Length: 239
Image 1 (cartoon, rainbow, N blue to C red):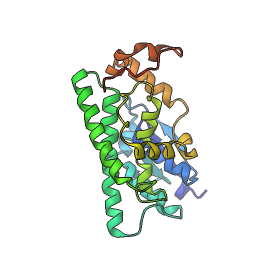
Image 2: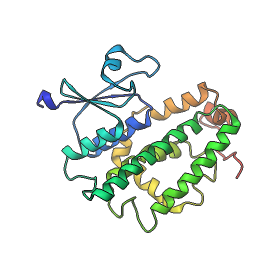
Image 3: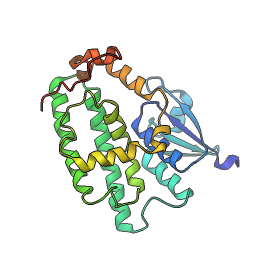
């Protein structure tokens, strides 16, 4: 490969925004190298490259650095036809707005998963259910956000369903209970091969380990689940 167009992705192993980028790169069969960093110990070379000091960043060649997952995903889509982003200006703008919507869902979902306070945990749960309802409405009569074919906006929601599936045995029973279309949508996204290869092999272990080590509400509510393979997997949240 021409070194001018060599792609190096810098990521944190459990970062959902990195997962978005990894998933689309795997879907598009883009060749790339990956460097993992620890967010609590960011190396100096990373701080010099990342304007916002966060992941993901994509290094192209030796000089160009892209930051922010949406920008990286659109770049990958542009260089690997056929494009998944619509050409229509209005639809493109709508999809970009939904990119931001996915970011809010992901931010609140991760806060929920790693929450330490019971009251905040309940409030986050209610916030998520409310915003899942909006997604359910977007999916009316459609398999994907924009219709029968997957588009770039759908890849933004992959981390949501990876997390929900991973913790399905212990997450509140009513999170998606009333949203059948959203359940089917999540199943479609998580069944894709690129979703499986678009996250690190030890992703689940690292997430579970983090939930335990932080003594989160999830862990305190059902420690047996997190401490052994034979733990009870019933749902213990109120409806």
